[in-house]
Each structure stands twice: as structure tokens, then as C-alpha cells.
Length: 293
Picture 1 (cartoon, helix red, strand yellow):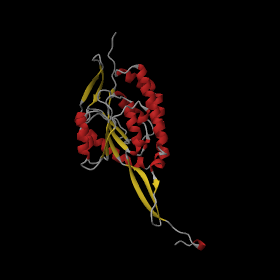
Picture 2 (cartoon, helix red, strand yellow):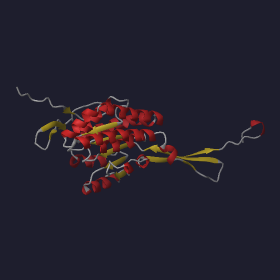
Picture 3 (cartoon, rainbow, N blue to C red):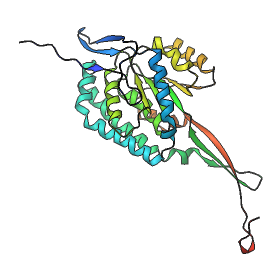
Picture 4 (cartoon, rainbow, N blue to C red):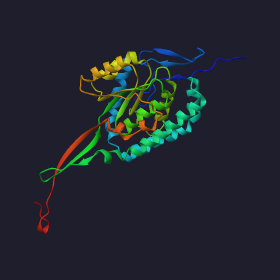
């Protein structure tokens, strides 16, 4: 007897939980044969606002963790992605990617997480400095995370593009709200399941599914967003994001890159989302007998 497959319900990921969209809307994801692969949540503005609240709540704890601990957690995510290789390869293939390409994309995604795990406790040494001053002070400049980052993730890269954008954001102590690919969303939600069962605190990464046409305006105009990253090639959307970003002088970046190339993994992507804090500290001179003056 023939039977109907029980299709997986792909939900959104907010604050470490998997709610359905508050609007109850969804869209059918189909393959090239017009067969339904899944029902995918069509996120609303309210979902985005909830995700921003969750991200802001998580920022203090995540940015306050030691660099070494953040490195451990990114490495743990890579471990768990390695353990679910078969599932991710299957989902990539369901979305029309060949088995060989799916294997390559998965391996690069795992390697990218390990790469940024290695940078967690090193980028500050690279980008900080001790500055010369003409007074009796030490003067230090150090990078600090900018805060909540909204991301319109790559449309044509189901997993690798998503991982390549999220990893440098959280490696630098930031938190994020990400809009996954509309046409290739399956791996994004499954990656959220990896995050939820790793050591990553809830709210550090929030993943929504839906349309850029409906949501990109909100991703760039929300007043509690500190930076926005656009990873697609729609010039009109990119222009609108840049205009909206000026409302509260948030940073705006276009990371529309070929993520399969090694040169597009580098610590400067971490640095894009850092703010330089300069601290002055008086020098205490020690005199004879240990007296300070």
C-alpha cells in the first residue's frame, strides 16, 4: 500500500525556542518536480520584533563570556554538525543540490565553524593597540562587540552562506537575528536545532524564515538593531537598507560573497562588527620606600 509521508514541520527559532509564526502563515516549499517538501513559516514583523527582544536579552551574557568559552561553544557546534552530516546532506539534495556538492558544502561549513572558533581569543590581539600619549597615562584601544546584528542571509547558499555569516558575528561576542533563504530554508531550521542542542545560550542566534520583500525593511529600520548585514544581490533592497540604517546611525554591510572561497573567511568580518573603546589609565610612579606619587 502507498502511504503519505509525514513531512517535517519547519518552525522558526527565537530565544532558544521553536515557535510557529504568530501570524499562522506559511508557504509550501516545492522541489523541481512540484512535489511539496515542507510547509515553512512565513515570519511577520511581530516575529522579528520578538527575535530582537530575545537577542538583546542574550547580548549581555554572551558578550561577557570569555573569548576561550566562546571558542569552545563554536567548536561544539562544529562537532554537532559533524554528527548530523547525513541529515544535512539529505536536505541539501532535497533542495536540488547534487550529492557531491552537498558533501562539499557541509564539510566547508564544519571547517568554517572551526576556523572562527580559533579566532575567538585572537582577534582582540590583532586589532587592539597601546597608543603613545604625551602624558603620564597608559592609553589602550580594544575592540568590543557592537550588539544586535540583523542579517538577510544568502539566498543561493542553503547552509554554507548561513554558517559563514553567523560564525564571525557570534565569535566577536555579538548576537543576531537572521532571515534564512526563502528558496532553500530547510538547512537553516535544522541548523537551528543544532544550535539549540549545543552549548549556545538561547537568543544569541535567532533564525526566521519568510520573504526578504516583506521583512528587509524591518531588519534595517528597527531602532534596537546596531548593525545590519545584507547578503543578496537585490540592489533596490540594498539601497533601502542603507537608507533605513541612517535612522539611528546603525552600521550597514553588504556581504554578498562566494562563501566557498577561502579568502572570504577572515578575521576582518569579525572586526566589521566591533567598536573600538579607548581607555586612559594613570601611571603610578613608585618612589623610594614604595611611596606612590
